[in-house]
Image (cartoon, rainbow over all chains, first blue to last red; front, side, top):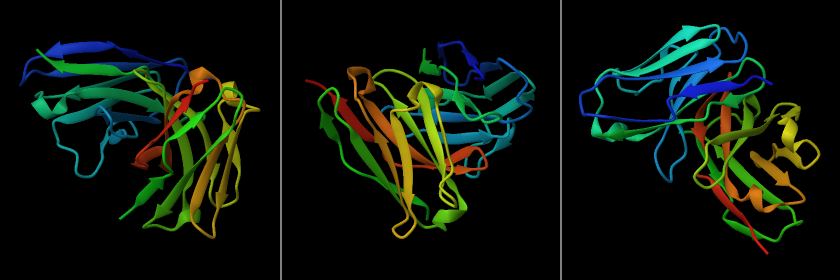
Length: 106
Length: 117
């Protein structure tokens, strides 16, 4: 099974800050990597697919990069509505989620 | 618009089974797979398995093999997930999601399954 190691598990940042989350795969997954946002009590929402493609309707302050085993998710300017938990997910071999990163406002 | 509507919350005793439904609308059901994902209280997302709505092929997470069965009814555009021999650590919110080439752009609202004696 492919393992996805996401870090940090939580972070606190100020409104307007740049926020970066990383995800490392246990083996090469090419660009078969998605990023989701989940708010409390809600289903996850797809933000980034194929490592770097912005889902329709998602604000451009969200972005993703990487390929192979190392991936990065960035919020260029943190907004209050971005408070949520973010998950990476690989789909190169079946599906696996990372452990999640809880983003809070400082 | 694409909608996935799941069945309501369930309370089950240890050792029992539960079957959760996921009714799809707004798209051609047989053109996409359906995955099931669960989330224990305060925990992360766990992929449970996938079913092709086209031909019924399935892939299950290794840890659930033998306890989970996923099926579809194309006549009603509904997917089902049955989990047997329930344990307390199966208490979770269970989600269905439409698989668009590996990405889940549409999700059900979630079904809380509580396992308690």
